Image (cartoon, rainbow, N blue to C red; front, side, top):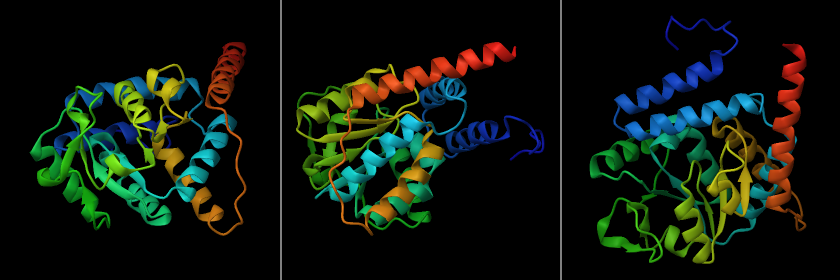
Length: 250
């Protein structure tokens, strides 16, 4: 963290994450549009009190169950995710035996190679989404994200798509895939469309997701009842209650 941001600063963690993403932009991982997307997410993080809520923990438990039980899980990686938590992405992939696939909205070979190097630096071995000879398309999608690896997202039964766009979430569901996402905005199209939405900062939530996945692998699993719409409603209620408490303190 830069010396301009003391560790004692009340927003030190969020400011560090912001700076981390700026460095990722400078290193060619993140598109400039990704910086704007992060700013929007950061605003919602304030609204949930910058902590993992009860509803987020419920979603994390359901997501862990889906990933552990999946036959062909895939983790979709974009520039922001590669810039913020590459180590955790690699760790999660190993825990649940998931493939990692680079998939970008603002796609370029240069950015893909930068992300590839970052993931390998953090311990990833096999990374999909960079070999053009092994790609196919999702027919119901128009953006560059329609191009997927035949052995990755195309054949996956469960896809973790952190910081996703709503169009692809819907397209993946039409392809019969269970979609898990991190989205700080419980009202976004992505959040409302996904099967499991974790309303939490991915930097916090992915660490807990890894921990829960590890614990689940040591147990005899029973089916987990989870309703995404109801859980999102709880998340919205939590935001309302947090804002009311803050207003009383003002």
